[in-house]
Length: 347
Image (cartoon, rainbow, N blue to C red; front, side, top):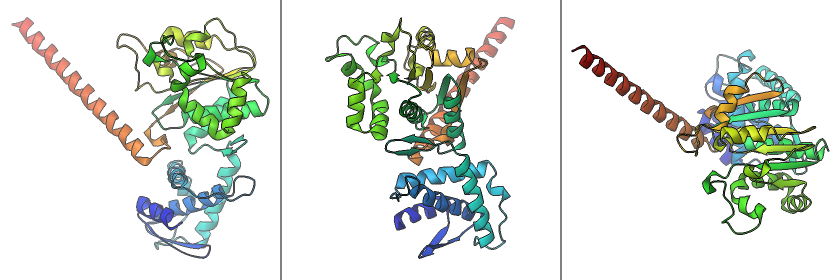
């Protein structure tokens, strides 16, 4: 526990001491309020699965800190009065209890055989709600925001509730040019390396043996996107991952495969397109064309939604800043060249 408390102290610039089950937080009022949210969140997290306590891991601490940041951004903490001193009093503690209680009451959770999956921020919460209530849902954004993981969790939940009869996982194999014939093994083995993130999520939620049995019975099906042409998918939960690497024709083909009582989730990051430069991403095109269609939802994730190691968000921001700088420089060069050409024409 001491290591986790030190992490919280370092990240929020506070001092935390405890005796038994009582904690004292010393620091700026705003940061102290966030720490109390984090501690109570971790307490509730440790009790969330059938009353059995869970070991608090560094990852859980990081995610709790992210959640506290989201609550602050949503101005929940602004409703909490604080004393002029640097310590959080009992009244504030009681109000924080109410805020966290309401947060957990309103939260959409996804139940699997191995526990409960819960959204970690407001954007993830909206994403899960949209998946539940829409026939087609898009999760668009940077890596590490939980787009694929939450889609798989929703698929497993729908299968366990018998809302669908099977789960179908697919993605474009751009690295192999969609020509998988030269690879060894059967179809599943050929596409396996490209679907590893989906497999990892399934193994975590269902266990290795159960996933293998469901694959054998074709309850869980893995297929490259190019092999879906001509099919109609009824009573299925379909996930298209890495959709930024689909062509316009491919994503249109995928969307028209969806049959009765089926749901589809399309995930991708339009900043990581591996298609040839002259080819437009099917995901980018779909975002432009399908925004106003009933039954289709779009969720856009940013670096602030990243739920991996904190450095991932900083890496994404650094690359975004670099790209913006390059774009500005290119634009300035273009304008300078155009101005020079105009002067030449005038002379």
